[in-house]
Image (cartoon, rainbow, N blue to C red; front, side, top):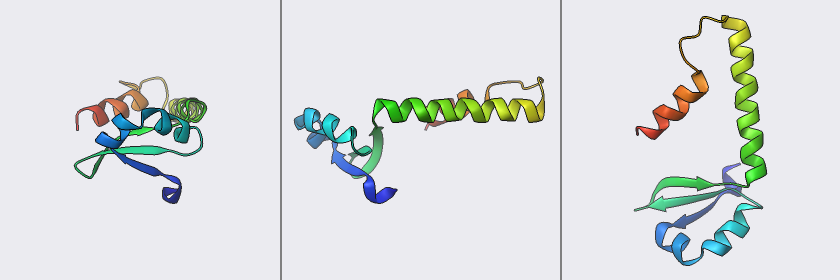
Length: 84
């Protein structure tokens, strides 16, 4: 799967945004800052499928653990990623 990822530096992404968006329809795109992955761009339909999958995983987790879940594990995972 990593071989299908296209990498752009921030400068390239700014200069070629339309091209980047076109490529994101066909493959995932990673934007790097100082050579370090900073953000990803993916096709919206793929994003929706991923979010639906995470919701299903959460539902299965809830069924397995029960209703006493103190917080949404998917939201917690996404929040933890934001704090990095």
